[in-house]
Length: 88
Length: 327
Image (cartoon, rainbow over all chains, first blue to last red; front, side, top):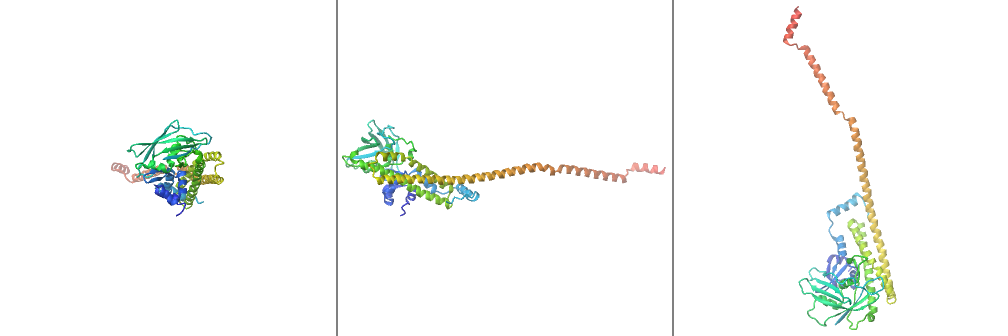
């Protein structure tokens, strides 16, 4: 498993058992995610759970949600009319 | 059984933690919407003992736990103990969780009694981990080394974790911008990351104070690793700001140039309209032409009438004309 795939997993799953996350990515990664506020914790009936934080949820929706018509139009305008080159 | 928890209240000056809030508002702890929520509300007395009222979902009867204050250190450390029965078959998951460790959520909540969020928003506060122990003869001095090491590791997690996240997300955002991904959204991601990193870098002051206070107790390798993470994060923040400004400037420039183009086009069209308005009367003879043609037609009619009159004589006039001719 890709060691840096943890962000994608968090964006996709949104919540789950902490022990599952530790099993997939290791204690250190989970602690780092908790410490940076990317995930939050709560006690649950099956054990400690993790949930995606507002910050991570915002980034997830910016990255993976469907583009609106206006966003597509603005993109087209900047790319084809204004010819803004954003290549790095 | 006795459970002990050592927590550090972030500070930048030496001194024992002071109570800033005597009671904290109710909060709901739940990650999975299908799980029952734990609702907690805390209060602290003048001896620093903490009472947490909690209930598992709104309908259930509230329960209470008492965290007994046992130690306050001059560098910001507090130690609490919790007495729980050895075996309690009907205990809830909130209490059974405390048998393992104090969750970051509860630590963060308790920190609210002593710590004001001056450098960042409350929800942007990073989470340190509490040191938990089941040692019946627990004392701060006995576990000092482990407690300090635990805070140091927490800071390594904060700065090292943010470095990993920013490296990943920055690379993704730059890739997306280069390969025609949505521009506005990726710029928003850079914005959010920059704000989050800034919030975390605000913790450096607390971390530096901690490192200074426990310089001899923290291993050199740990201290160096921590400082390296802070340095890398500062570099990454510079990169985030650079790319953010770079792209914002590019878009602003394109918008500006476009605005100037539209402005020049509007000005040209305006000038052309004024010029045409001025020149139009010089070429426009429509009224005069009509008058002339009316006049021409009128003269034509008169001429024709005169010619007709020349040949046409009414009957009385003809008789008179004949008699005159006879005479």
